[in-house]
Amino acid sequence: MKMYNPPHPGEVLKTLCLEPLNLTITETARSLGISRKTLSGILNGRAGISPEMAVRLSIAFNTSAESWLNQQLQYDLWQAERSRKRLHVTRLTAA
Image 1: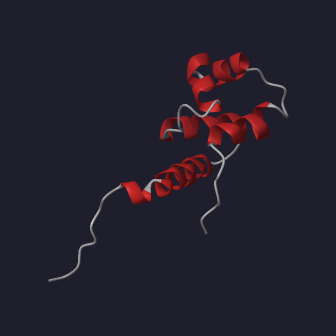
Image 2: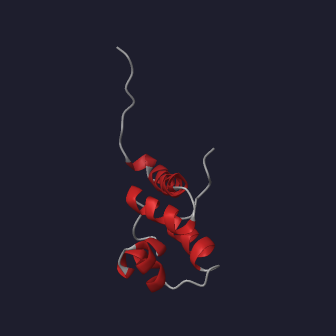
Image 3: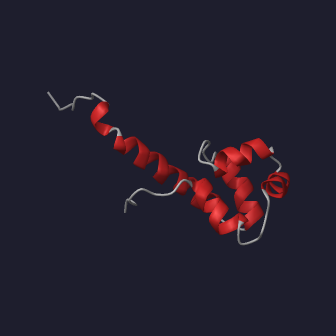
């Protein structure tokens, strides 16, 4: 089932993981083994969740990597569908 305008996974990460644990970006980035800039990009919706990042998040927050990747996929697909009319694709049929 498609979600209507799903949130960016960075928003979910911030709201459901960092805020309840009172974690700073610096603390979280250090724990994840990434730069503060990289984490900030994710939290602010400027960067997506890669498979490696999904694994890092699953280890740090005892979640599944699949859940993080699924959130990213749903967000990306929603964004792509919004520009469907501008894609200029013709339907192919069997001859």
